[in-house]
Length: 306
Length: 289
Figure 1 (cartoon, rainbow over the protein chains, first blue to last red):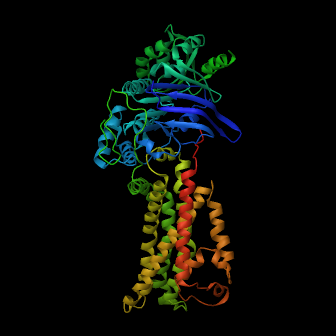
Figure 2: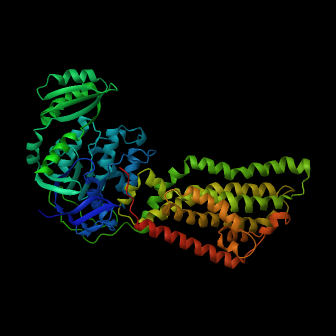
Figure 3: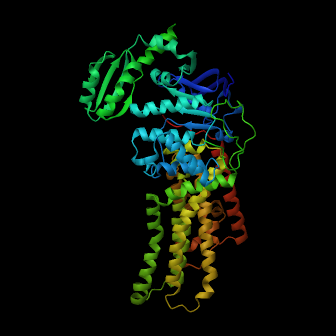
């Protein structure tokens, strides 16, 4: 595998806190999942590659160039940040056009690329609405659109599925897989094993600032099967959602959240659960879905103990 | 997607074939083109903001005072303060010494700070542009916004007060008007450069900025050589109007040589902006998660 991202004994600390500790690894074309619980160092790992942080020690190179201090790299690198931040007064189209202009394209090319990117993330109809009025899932998708609109060779995606409903989650998963098949290097971070597994089998496991393991996600999956997987869903009609999923053999338990809109499900078979919940989620108006990472944390504890 | 139609000379990416794992000779977007794109992005948000409403009110207030002077005070009270003197007080003390620096403080300290606080700086820093171009584009947007808020009221009060006794002789005063407008623009640039630097160096620059404007500049602007340690002394000296030379105010009638003022102001602008650009270019903007 030809590597496009290289970390050579890279460390990064914030004052006395070590966020990334002596990491040496490479990432090549295709989709690679960066998997770890919250606070593991995933964002620091991505920000080093995105040239937003300089390594305290060691070296981080992207396409053969130092990531820090090489703005020209961003002709070839797209970044989808984790933060839910926008210039809310801009419409989706204006947002993409502005960022494409900053990438050096002329107006006609900006418009063509913006339209294409909006189509890729299914936001064409909402392109003239202000981003301030977008739902969480739409905001995630417009962030994704800006990262790929300039047709980058490398994509750094920080928790791109966070807060998305099942339909859009599937759409973005398909898009990421397609980008990987096209030969791009896609590094996607998540604290949810199932999310990463849906996009790729190649993972980097990160914990306490160190790469614990890299390789095939199925090995992690075998460990994971011993632990129930928790999924929280926010629905317009939580009772209808509960009725639809409660009889499923994949569901171990189901509880209603205190605010009345949330349903929390525990499942031993997340793949099957996610496949079976799509129709029910649409019927019940599911607008948000996330998976707490406690169960992943327990897998990491197990790995560290080994 | 296909390749760009502009400068970077990117090859058309193949949708299937793996691409080379190293990047060829590509360059950042040309500096001025990038600065223009940042200017376009920043201008609208800067103009249509709550900050602009406040600054417009502060900068527009002298128009009301000039109207009052013209319509009521002159006709009913026959004041000792002539229209020319009143105009110079407004330009020198209200605009150059206080409100224009205050407007610069509000806008210029926020040029980068707003992007950091709003966490939108990531989008700017992950584009193929030099950081200096971001700063220049934003500074140009600041200047366009504040000039459009400052010059119209200054122009209005000039005509309101210069024509109190009629339009005769107005032509002879037009050069003074242009000089005053020029000094106002220079004030915006100089304080804007200083507060841009302050906004990049400090996390919370407003209070130190207010202390600089209304404590340091006031205390140091006393007779002797100390005024040379202020910004305001050089700018005020460029408008040598005669103001009432009585009492405490007379102490502040020090006029520095014009050449010295222009050199000092030019040097300050270069040093402040270069310092701001250097610090901005080398600083990490780690966003709180």
